[in-house]
Image (cartoon, rainbow, N blue to C red):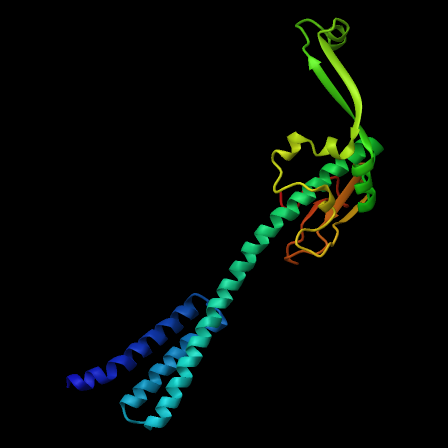
Length: 249
């Protein structure tokens, strides 16, 4: 009696595991590979049960069991990959997008500076880079203090307060120490036009005008032209509204 019970123990366990996995898969909406591997476990249980009942030959039993074991292992691996690959994709996307977002923020700062001088945004990356490299902006340096009951002009006339306006290279003015304190990664002006982790693909930038409440407003937009995830294309600014925010903000 004990021998008969032990003979059917393993097939029953396999059938229970396979059936349990199938029920779990259906109730939790598991993927295709999970359902196939669960079915393979259940089928293995059926084969071992038939073998215990002496309903199949020893040779056929061995062939079927080897095939099922190999299939079960392969399906389990595919099921693991179907879960692990999306997780790895999301992790890599988050890593890459941190660099892309920082470049878009830098481009936005350059556009702000360009508009300060030329009263409009730049619509060409080469022109924007030339502005940063060769152009200059007025920078006011102040020193001293303004005593109580003094206007700024009175303090300057009395020598308490000094103001000096000088021309400073655009790149230095835009990307000064205060800006770079919170910069993600090392700042490199030469790499600013290019989308990180691409073969020198440049960001696409546009600029123009939109009408807002009867007023013409200058706008710009910078876009990741080669996104890692085509379902999430990063951009800053907008060509349809006077917004300078990034779509990740």
